[in-house]
Length: 426
Ligand SMILES: Nc1ncnc2c1ncn2[C@@H]1O[C@H](COP(=O)(O)OP(=O)(O)O)[C@@H](O)[C@H]1O
Ligand SMILES: [Mg+2]
Image 1 (cartoon, rainbow, N blue to C red):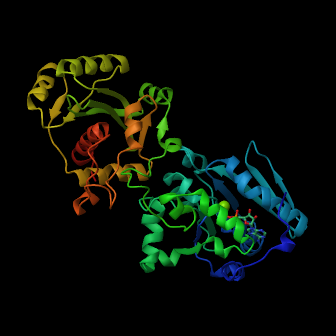
Image 2 (spheres, protein in one colour):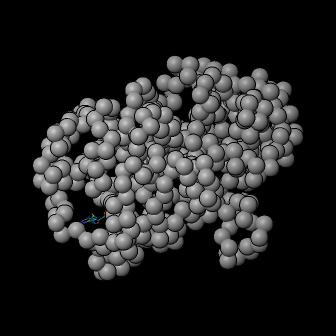
C-alpha cells in the first residue's frame, strides 16, 4: 500500500530539509541515521522540486545496491506519488533500467542502475548526468561512487544519498562524514550532511519505535537505532562483506585464464598444534588482490607445503613469484628456499601497520576472496580485538587482535604487506 501523503506528519528536521531551496544544496547531500527515520521518503518527496529546478537537458540516475533494491525502496513510492498526487506519469522498464518521468509538462529521462558489484562502474562510463540519487550509498562499490560523481559535470547538478550507518572504517565515513563533522571547509563546500533519528520521523508511533529498539543489540543497535558509525563488536575487518567480497571459484578461474591476474605470490604462517596457513594470492592490473586458494592444516611439515605449491602451480598453470613467511621457523623457510622456485622472504610486518593496509584494501573493495577459501572466510568473520571489560583486557589490546582464529589472517598480512610495500608504489 503506497503512502497516503495527505496524512503525512512532519518533524522540524524533515520540514527544514523539505523547505530548503534547490539552489542551496551543494553537489552531494547525504541523509543518514537510524532505520525508518524517513530518509528515503524525504528525498522522494523532494525529487519533483529538484527536477523542476534542474531541468531535463541531461540524464538522471537512480542507483542502489542493485536495480531491484531501487525499485523496492524508491520507485514503489515515487511512482504513485508522482502519478496520484502530482498528475505526472512514470514508466519503468525493469530489464533495461530505463525510467521515464513525465511531470509538469516535461519529460525527464532517467536510468536505474545497480552500484554494488565490483564491475558496476563500467556500466556508467561516459555521459553527463545532472541528477543522481544513491539509495543506501554505503552499499555501492567505491569505484561506482567515484565514477558517478565524475559524471555530474553541469554546475547546477545535484546528488542525494541516504544511508544507514556502517563501520567507522567505511570510506564514506572516512572521506566525507568525518571531515564534515570536523569542520573541513573543502568537504563542506561540496557535501552536506543531515543526521536523522527515529524521532525525526513524526509518522512513527512510540510503540513502533519501542519495538524496533528491541530488534537490535550491541553495535547493530548503535548503528540502526542510534544511527552511529561504529566498529562492530571489535571485529578487525568489520567492513568485509560476503555479498561484496566473495567470488565463486569459477569467477576466479576466469580471471586466471583471461590473464587478468598478472602476478601470483603467497603468505605462510607456520604452526604445529596451531594450524599452518598458506595463502595463494594474485593481483590484477588495477591493483585488486585475490585470495585464490588456501592450505590450512595442523601438524604438517615443510615438504607438504612444497608439494602443495608444486601442485597448485600445475593446477593453475602459473608460476608464483614469492612467499613471505613467518620468521619463527627459519629451518622450514630454508626447506622452501631449496625445494621451490619461489623467492622466500621472512619479513614479519608490524601487526597494526599491516592490518591498516589490509583494511584499506577491503574498504575500497580491492580484496576479493574465492569461496573455496573456507578457513580464510571463517577468520574474516571472527578475527577480533579483545573488548574493553573482557577478562584480561589491558589498554594495549586496543590495537592488537586476539591470537585466536588468526592463522589465515597472519598469512594474509605477510603476503599483502610484502607485495604492497615492495612491488607497488604507494
Ligand atoms: N512523509 C511521510 N508520510 C507518511 N509516512 C511516512 C513519511 N515519511 C516516512 N514515513 C513512514 O516511515 C517509514 C520509514 O520511512 P523511510 O523513508 O523508508 O525511512 P528510512 O529510509 O530512514 O529507513 C515509511 O515506511 C513510512 O511508513
Ligand atoms: Mg531508506
